Image 1 (cartoon, helix red, strand yellow):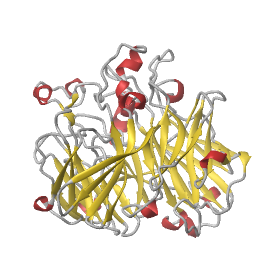
Image 2 (cartoon, one colour):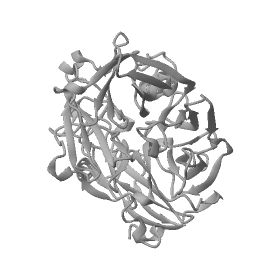
Image 3 (cartoon, helix red, strand yellow):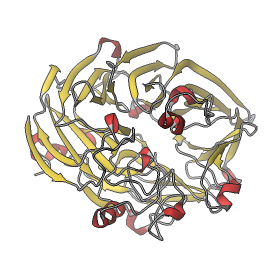
Length: 505
């Protein structure tokens, strides 16, 4: 491995920190690396794996004002690039405005998700609840050849070089970016059209907007989506002709909002509503469908099937688990991150555009989340969903599952004890024809070896174990979302002889 340190950021976290989401598998990084010719510790790098795997992680640099939430950490993008049987690695902090100001101050300036906005030391900020730091640490997608990082509760989108991980500045869409509301995590990319679909939300009416950015990176559609009040939507889906938005019955308690508190409450007596809007539609075009009460954090895919819009996502059996007195104080405080408590399972909703009725069914008994699929089938009929299983009581991924949505069959792979994975990404093999003809890629945090690895599976059969395992320069923090971009979708990829050694110079 050819290795260079290219940067370090100052951290003021205490050496005796005991917060479980700032230590152990969640211990933040402060070093930025440039690593070429990654060491292959098992197997061989496939020569028909061509492109980049990108992953966003939370890496806090300073103690919280009072209570730290793992989604408060500053964004760091990790890139593992594959070309001609070799691989390289880059990681860089996302240079947000909030990061720069807190580095200058040497401390946290904004309240996090577990704190009231009034605790912020700044009178301005970002997010649907305002006065938060725009950490840009939740999601990452690639649109128009550039990676975009986003924040959990709306904020700026930051442009990131998908090969070097260097921040290129904020996205502006030629001056039309909705800086007042920002963009939520999980904008969606339609490979068939090159469009990016997104939404945002706020505590101010109409409470949600929906927009479309075309293949030329121009905002071509932006419309209000009136809701009954402030909501907490996190994800969306789309089909060839529609976008699917949601009004879930888990949202900030109105009485708390009046007192400046942002505590989410689940209302089991209210239905979940799914809104189907034509991709260039307005408020009057939205069709709302009532469904069983739940909260859906992440959707996998949607498609059209005759008169029906079919949507797959993770139905939570208990979106707001009560404190049962089990576990230590941290497990009890962060029970809303424990999938064994919320019990998300892959689920299907069929929305009949003629009758207005919704039919739904559970697709599996397996508890899993963070579903991914072959991006070339996004918005279309598909068969396979790849998801993560979780360590009981913790926000840690202990394995992978491949769901066959046609037959109900599943494949499982479990990491060794004390080894935790990342959200996987499906990378189609160059020249692939079948939907699962490709590779499943993830990054691991290995507490046994105090190391991290990039692990590549055959997407057609994950049970046989890794095709290859690559060592990263140091153990990385656990985190949230990832994506895959084929080399053919990166404008500069073909203009250098060997991107594994040429990028980032």
